[in-house]
Length: 217
Image 1 (cartoon, rainbow, N blue to C red):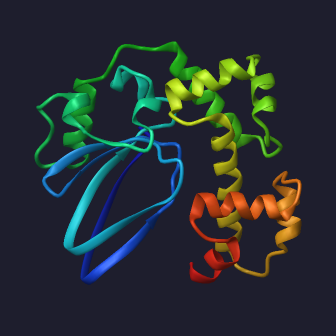
Image 2 (cartoon, helix red, strand yellow):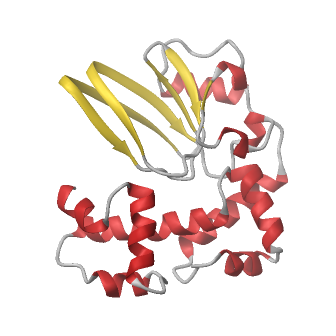
């Protein structure tokens, strides 16, 4: 697991919450149901109404394949009932100790390729110069096709997407730090050929241009 999370809300009017994707599979409990959320290729909107809450588990990228028993790409951009993955004995009152005990009870057998997938995702996060899937494949001693198969099977999304998402995370971190941003210089720092490519990638992931996103958040 990567982390547990919880969201609570109380709205008199429906609120449209933008959710920006990361390469994590999630197990969530809320609204009287439990679901597994595959990795999303782009942002999505969830409408929050009234008073409610959701408790969830974010799995480390590359680690959900043994639980699923199938390629993680089969649930990409999908939400499936958790009972289809874990069986019917899901916790009815989820909290950290209860869910952790449940997951330990259902812990799958060791899969050495999980470590390979985790290492690939971590290398993207650690290496600031990692801007292309071909670089990642060479660093790991794999062919580009082998890398793509590994990501589809264990991460659920392609290596190019994971690299792009990490680069764009740096953008939102820069926004959060405050101060003026030289967008052209930032695009170059992130390895983009020009500012136009950077803006298109950001809009595809976040649903709006970076300047609009910075103003709103």
